[in-house]
Amino acid sequence: MSQDLIVELRRQNRRLKQLLVVLSISGASCLLLAAKAGVNSQKFTEIDVERINIIMPDGRKEMVLSNRLRIPDPIVGGKEVKREGPSRPGLIFYDEVGNENGGLIYDGNLGKDGKPDAGMHFSMDRHGGDQQLALGHYESAGTMESGLKIFDRGLIQDYGPLWEAYEKAPAGPEKDALLQRWEEAGGKQTTRMFVGKTRGKSSAVILADGKGKPRIMMLVTPEGTPSLKFMDDKGQVIQSLPQESPKLRK
Image (cartoon, rainbow, N blue to C red; front, side, top):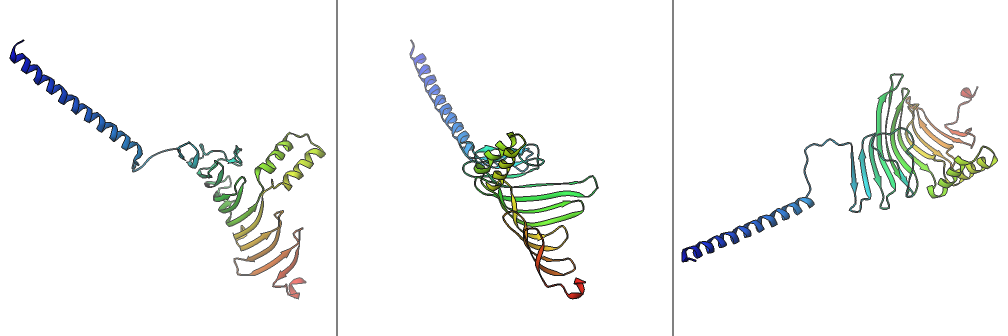
């Protein structure tokens, strides 16, 4: 082998090594950039999406933003239950164990009478149960109600099995007894307090007993007439302030 050929082979060997080094560096840089892109946030000016799930690394939901078609059913006590009423778009919150613990839903349309049928409802649920507090605005049949409500309801682990048994039981005393036990376990949601504006356009504070029956009503009518009424369990007024004048009683 000639000396010139040996020199040329050595030169080509050096170039091959240099090329391999460059390729190795380039490959490592690409992998580094790809890894970095995987942890960095991405910025979007605008996106169109039907649903967004905010999840933990293990897949548990923390929050869901959805249109009315993809809104998830509630998860209460670790069980998925059927959502009551029509599906509406909104924002749903979840606790650490995966139960729904509140949300914001809304809707708006014109009813068959041509009047608004609309509303917005922001609720906060108890752990293992249903909503305990709600802030809402509701319109229907030409009237409106806006205000804060406080509710009573038990835990689904207590009243859920009773309701399932009630639905399966044939009509009769046993079915009636199951319904009574379901109510006693807190299955029936009751409104304990309302603060806001009524459909009669009065500003009001209404306090109710454990069965949801109003017992104290403080009202101011649109015309400015104030009143304070105390009621019995049958809804009859037992005392009111200011007291009616003798002329009004006649």
